Length: 193
Image 1 (spheres, rainbow, N blue to C red):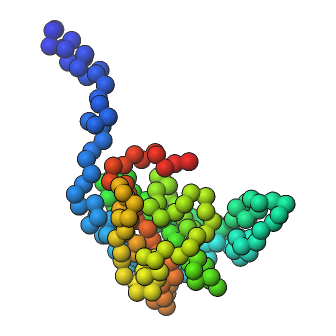
Image 2 (image 1 turned 180 degrees about the horizontal axis):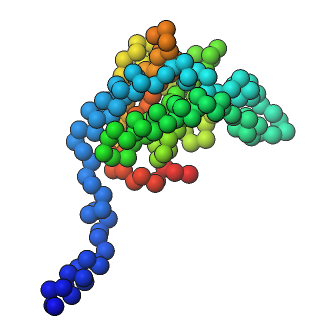
Image 3 (image 1 turned 90 degrees about the vertical axis):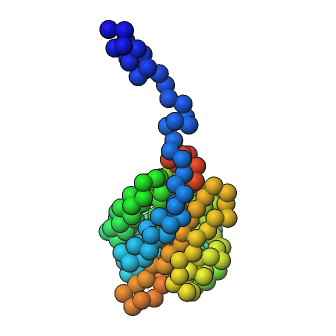
C-alpha cells in the first residue's frame, strides 16, 4: 500500500520545463534540407502563381492617405490554389519530429528588388519575415535561390535555421521560394500572434 501511495504522489509532481522540452536534434539542418528538397519537387509553382489576386497586388503598392491599412485590408487570395498549396506545406512541416514551418515566398512581377510572403504556417515561424510586412526587400539568399535553383541554408539569426528551396512551374522556371524553418530552442507557440 505504501508503494502505491508513493507512486501516486510521484506521478503528480510537476515536471520541470527542462524535462518537458527535448534538446535540439544535432541533425536539424539536414532534416530541414530534406524537407526542402521534397518540397521543391512536390509544390506546384503554377498553383502558387495563382494564389494572390490581381486586386491584392494592385493595393499592395498604393497608399491611400485616408486609410493607411487599405493594402492589408485588401490582401486577398484565390481560395482553391491557396488551400491546396497551404495543405501541401502543412504536410511537409510534419516530416520532421520537431516544430517547423514551411512558408511560401513569391517575387513580385515588375519589382525585382521586392518579395512577399504568401503563405505562413502553423507556428508562424520565419527567420526572414518582419511581422506585418506585406512585402519587403529581396533577401540576397532568396535572390540566389531564384536565380540558381539551388537550396541554401540560412542561420544568420541566432537560434534559427531556415533552408530556402526553389519552387518551379510546369516549364521548369523558378517562380518562388520555400522557407523550411525551425528554432533550435523551440517554443511552438512563441511566434503565434
